[in-house]
Length: 320
Ligand code: UDP
Ligand code: MG
Image (cartoon, rainbow, N blue to C red; front, side, top):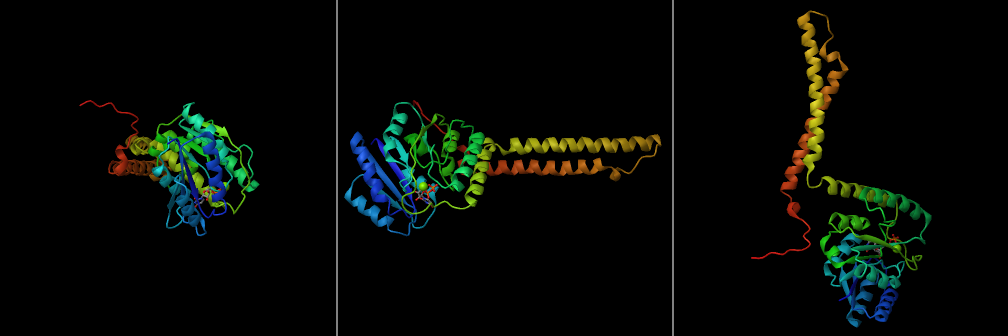
C-alpha cells in the first residue's frame, strides 16, 4: 500500500464526507493504493455514524472510535499503530488542509528521501489571537529542538516515512512536537513544504484559550529535558550538586580555619556565625546535597524504568 491517511477528529461530522470524497478524487487521479483511517476522538455528534457508513461503502475507509475524548495526540497514536502505507499522511478533519498536497508530499518522502515533511501554512486563515502566539511558539520550538528549518511545528498536515510513525510515541499533547520526537528518535531528515490553508468551513476550533500555550511550553520543557538528560539524570544533578557542595565546603573550611588561626594567634576575631559567608556556605552545602540526591534518585528511577533499554535499531544483520 502506498499511502495511509490518518485523520483525528472531534465533532467534525459536516466535513467528513466532503473530505473523504476529495481524498478519493486525488488518490484515484494519481493511481495510489491507499487507506483513510478516521479516529473518532469521542465525538458527540454524528461523526461516527458517517464514518461507519463510509467504511461500509468503501474498502479504503477505516475507523477507530474512542469511548471518550482523549485528545489529538492519543488519536494520532492509535492511527499510527494501524497505518500500513509506506507513507503516512496526517491531516485535520476540518478541511483546513488540502488533500491536493498529498502527491507532492508523497514524492518528497519517496523520492527526495525525507523522513518527515511538515506542512507550512505560510498564509494562514486563522484569527490573529492564534497567529501571533503561534509565531512565538514556533520560534521557541525551533531554538529548543534545534530543527532550524521548520516554521510550523504544529501543522496538522504532515507526511512520514512509515518507520517514523512506528518508532515514535505521541502522547499527552505532544502532537505539537512530533518533528522533535522524530529527531530524538534519530530521524533527522526533516523537511517542510508550503501548503495551502483555508479558513474553517464548518464548526469551530477545538483548541481554544490560553492554557494551550502554557501547556505547550511546559511540554517543550519536558521534551528538552528528557532528550538532554533523560537517560542520565545523575550527570546533571550530581555534577551541579558536587560543585555546590564543594564550594560550600571550601568556604566553610576557610571561615573555620581563619577562626582557629586567630584563636591561636590571640588576635580578636568575630564569631563564625556573624559572618554572612557562613550562611552562604551552609546553604550551598545543603542545596548541593539535595541536588546530588535528586540525581541519585533520578538514576534509581530510570534504572527501574521499563524503557531504560529502548534504543532505536534501524537494521540488524545477525548471523547465527
Ligand atoms: N481534534 C481531535 N481531538 C481533540 C481536539 C481536536 O481529534 O480533542 C482534531 C480536530 O477534530 C481536527 C484536528 O484535531 O481534526 C485539529 O483541530 P482544530 O482544527 O480544532 O485545531 P486548529 O486548526 O484550530 O488548530
Ligand atoms: Mg483546524
